[in-house]
Length: 379
Image: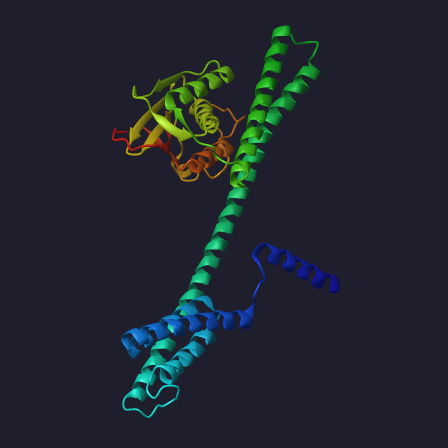
């Protein structure tokens, strides 16, 4: 017990070094009330001597009550400040000065009215402050629940996307070892190439996972520079073709130069992930289309495949990190859960949005990025 108390005091001292001495409870209320009432009295003296108007003085003290109710804890400081303000108005600013006199004609009504108004305002302000705290706590709880849900979805997606290529690697290695003498050189090369492809996929997935972790923990700062969209798209297509030599991509970019503030490497990663996702899950022999357009202050980039499309029940949660069902072609090696979640994180970190939809011949994934200057072209 003594050790716990000592640890708590040590933590408090560390906190005080960062933010200054911590003031609690009645001491805080007394300090806040004293400062605000003293300031109100000085202002009241100024207004009273300039205009000789007791009404202005009363309004100043009512405002002081509002501020005390706002910054002090509980209902009591504001109610007490209401009585103090009424007494100050009577004692300091009402004839006979420096004397309390409630016998003047009409003053008891004024006294009672000011007490009631100040008390009501104080109570309402304190109540609204407490309601605001409750709302903030609920929002915090909802945010934490949302983070937990997202974390669980990411864990499921990671287990799905990492388990399938690992299973392929293990199976291929077993085949190489068990049938080593029966396999020709060409068959061995095919198996080794499959192992290499799955290993590269795992490496890419781990890099993506590190990227999303750094962004979400604010360890990575997005350094934006003005980049030419055509060059970024060209680099992403070239990098993807090195990984997937057989992929066909139809790139459609406006002839006008489009400059976008971005981290080029991260946006290239988004483009590669989206095009690779369209290649594997589109399951079509027709080319993938990459189309860009400018509307307002945003550039829109669309990745379209000519496959079976995305099931309607998945469209609303496709970026939440849920592992997808196997595609119709039976390719279950790669899921699209974690990859799309990473794309969403990167795009949002750039101030853009990403969403999925279906068109008449397949699926469409679209993301937008803000431009450095206003444009008026149609999308």
